[in-house]
Image 1 (cartoon, rainbow, N blue to C red):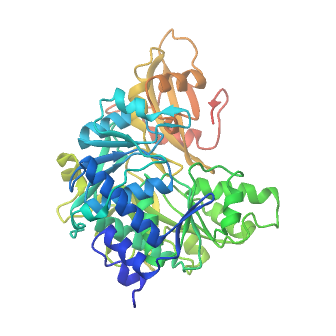
Image 2 (cartoon, one colour):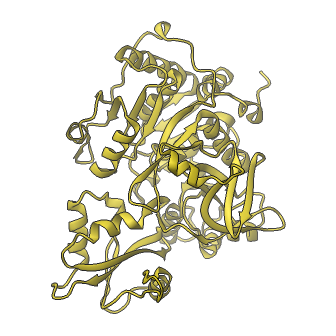
Image 3 (cartoon, helix red, strand yellow):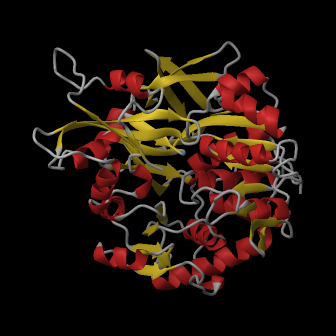
Length: 509
């Protein structure tokens, strides 16, 4: 065969891409996890049997199947089995709870829900039952199985919407983002062609596979024919043994990952934390230039950072061939087929990797301009070399460890607290997380003192996901407001607290 990564990226569907790669290098490993390994060929065969099992359960082309599963080989198998059937998938991050999961199940009208059972002490099956979900089945170890000869032909049209991803917007409710196989292949191709891995590389997926980065990264594996180590639970230094055992050469995920690897390196200066590692790569959160320089200087590896969002999983990506200045201060360049337009400072996008809109038609109309460009809400500029520099955000969004957090969702919940007169939730720069969540509270007259522990306990009881809980609380006599509409001036709060904790502030995780 004369297949190349660029020719493989022309595949119409994800199943076609897997099929072509499995025929090309059937015996090479695709996924590694602990003592387990699955080759490209075995993965294809197993996924088709799972598809037959799902088909026997009643899953058909167009059937909406939600799944809330950790990063495991079984999760990838289930996802590709659904792709083989042409079902509509609605992946959910495993640490989401009733509020977000219930909303997603209702809005997507999911007919089946795959859960891990009891995972990390939480009963996902029971939660799905409480939410009135239909077609609940557990898919942690055991997956449906059947005879592939009973299957209909695989889907041939990669432009139909078959993915619903969820992202927090500037309002409290999540948004259902509509993707196709082709948009995901285009996004993964951007990542792959920028990093230019080789079959000798070993990657790693240490973030939730249910994140849009899951198919993004898997497309890169299929295009270039190299494996990745899957981490169901990522924590350093515990995960280092597996990185070393499998000889990982490409690691990362987001700014938080870079910081964690650097912290481990600093425990033993001069001794590579992962001897085979040559590249850290990721995106999803601001990356300070000083962090780039520290990684290169102390770890002796390259760091390539990119810019993406749920609506367009890979917009730009730094390349190992870029200069240090470009890698430290920009988000890389867009690939062929991704148009970037700067309108009044705002970044707007058009291209195959851009989503087809939202479940809510009104949100779609608002998000795209008259020429079909997606309004990102992010501010930036393009350099003479075509590299993108991010300068800020129009959206009132906090990006913590690569995950979008709606400030308004937290504010709406805190406004119900009897001790809160008013509240503003802001993101503050943080070397480990990209941003941390800070709640600035105007206390109600006569109310007793508030503590961070009390605030987080209240939000937990209200069903807020753990990763959205504030790490810092500031209590003020009055929030700063504009003179005309009396809107809270969040930029003043960010400027006031960006330098660190003020006297009397309380901090969390």
